[in-house]
Image 1 (cartoon, one colour):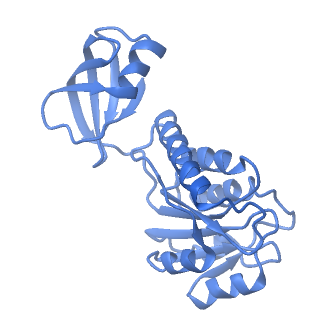
Image 2 (cartoon, helix red, strand yellow; image 1 turned 180 degrees about the vertical axis):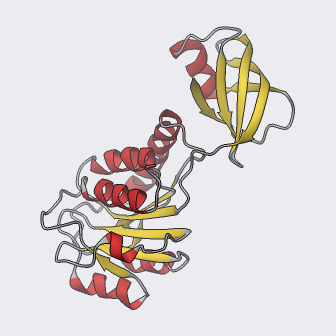
Image 3 (cartoon, one colour; image 1 turned 30 degrees about the vertical axis):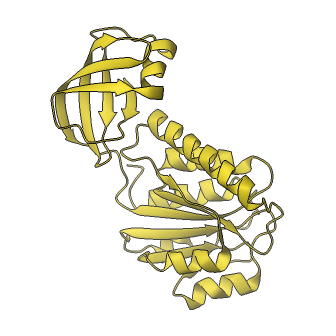
Length: 242
């Protein structure tokens, strides 16, 4: 069934879908009157709907059922991702959203080769957020994960203090995720480096702020592989692949 997000809460039993979603339903999916689709509101309410009319710019639906969306993980995970080269960030965002990430914070660390200027970063963030939205719809998420503006590593560590637990994945070793997450936290931050990894001083900054150092094994993973491996391990360890 087609899956879409609404911009506003839906209180009545009828709703008008407009804009890009309406055009996608009418022109790309070619859905017709009487077909079913799902809407998810900003508060995470899942609405089962039947199309009552379709035009190129508007799709009217009747709500047949509503209930809380249960597709979200039981732990809210923020990825603090050091900017990789090229378009790897797009791939990381897409796949992490599919796997259940809650928030993504692009980070400019000391070893980042990619260092876009402010204007380019604003443009990239808009595209990254669009990718997150599309991936959330495709994977039937209950939320659209936020992609924040890029920040310095020091700022990222400050932001991470709001999490119950933080883990920095370090290529030179650390504890296993299984050992670190003996009791699943409600909120968790994971730091992943770019192609050059992290400097020791950056690791120490996370540790001094109460974070932990973790390993992804003896093999060195690519910058675009590491966040997917780390997130998958955390999701498995917290029971979110069951």
